[in-house]
Image 1 (spheres, rainbow, N blue to C red):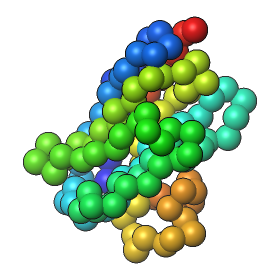
Image 2 (image 1 turned 180 degrees about the vertical axis):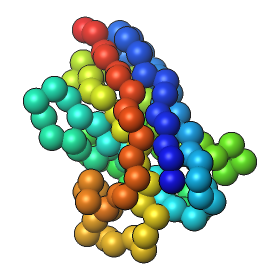
Image 3 (image 1 turned 45 degrees about the vertical axis):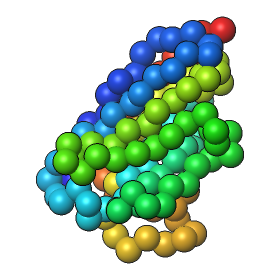
Length: 126
């Protein structure tokens, strides 16, 4: 699976942004997709995940109610709609694919994903 994240940019606090993750190389509906982020000097952290069918979604507590993950099988693309952005949301955002059998203990860990995109920078100014 090859993934390409895009849509990042410089925005002000309170603004919205939509990230895209274009996928290729394998049937898109055959794997779950996750979003992670990494701020300078910090570890990569889980943001959101959507199941293969799109029926199940998971979010980190710090984005609940602000971010929405979705997927469009016809476009082989997953999205992360971000609203009410805060300066602490500043990070490089990565999308990742979990092509294996989902493991409950791994859904929010980087080890639960086997393919990664290159990341897109999101900067939120105060």
